[in-house]
Length: 284
Image (cartoon, rainbow, N blue to C red; front, side):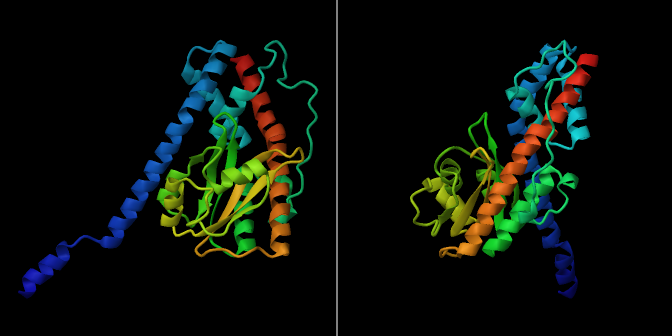
């Protein structure tokens, strides 16, 4: 009996190892799904570059995109989106944006960044998420940026939320969620109880409740022109009360500073990447 018991015990799977492998596979699937969602945009950008610079094939166009993306430390999808929506340059001119004046980055003291020159887009998105969660006293939240072509919000950073939540809300349109309403209103929006708030579609409501979220504060990232360029949302495990005025002030200041910075990044860092891409294309 003892030998049989020992053999049975020895044959049991390592539960922790199995769970770790499942988590790894789900993360891999999520990344693959994100790549699939980005692929049409990147393919569109490849086609534009291939035609514009008379490149031999789409692979050559992708190589230029990847080189410019890596040099500028910006995501390939961000650069591809800029290629698609930015008016084409004069092929005969050396610069894509002749006469452009580069501006220094706006301050980011609201999220604890003292040296704006040393940070990149990913760092800023992570910092605004951390700051917003600290202000609201929770450890669940996400940051989204505006996808102009698809007309909605796309998750870029998240913490404390389930993989099912991240997959379901990877992209949200212009209605059916609190973040969509906050983007339209360009104002801090609080859902006091997810279970009863009519802003959600029923599918969205169930997905949020399944992630153990019962309330949320959505803060639009707004630039000086009043344009919403992103969203940071803090999720709470219990129905929410009104925020203290000091919390509201801190969250609004955070949203405005990061909104200004994201617009600066697009007009400066992304524009620099486009200039470099144009130079590569003209030499190809």
